[in-house]
Image (cartoon, rainbow, N blue to C red; front, side, top):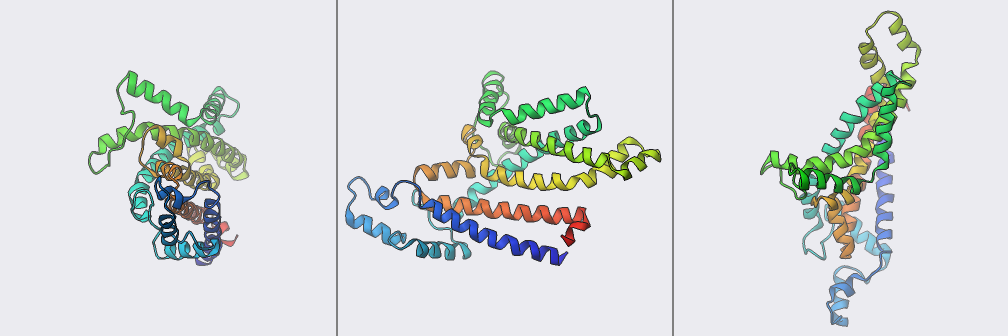
Length: 314
């Protein structure tokens, strides 16, 4: 198991380094000049020169990357030019919000997608299978921002059951926190549930046709036990991998949903930073997202290896 972990780490670390290079290089392609934007309306050349020197904007690109990478290794992601705060503080403030939203959305996706996929695979070709596939197609087709607006109109404006926007920390009021996160979590989890359903169905169909499943049925093992104890654990590997990938996608792809529901998470922080040319914040948020995504993939590999020991020799 340690050798398996070492091999995965040997792949993960270079991937993170390459991702950091791409993040920093693409950041320089954004239009606009930070020093000019911060110099005010007068754009005094001396002020512009001071800003360039302070933030190393007058250095060549490789040198600027070296300064930034050295800071990242020391836990210093730079300073937000717009907010005049260390980026690491902004990450500590916003990351828990997006993590909570992603966890709730993943719970929604697993609670809907996996049972639907199992039932659809157990009853292929029936009306249940058709209904499950129809719901999955609907989940994949409906845009998140459109579904979010409709839910606000129904549950907030018409019925008054849930708040339309805002965020209440769970430490202040857990009930208000869950009420505020219910709609954005469902909007995000809805699309992932459709993907989970399709992959669960495909994995279960492959396993249910195996010889050992037919043997278990021939021995008179109850149908529920065959599905849950024999088939599901062997079909879980692609489901675990997909769940990890989708969770990472939630951390980086909740921008529109956080904007619609005014959730102060990573997505909203990223949008505000891009509009204000706050390059340090953009780089910090993206590198944290990339690192989290790589760690989630590593966790999925380890969990899959625990479920299926054959993968440890891969």
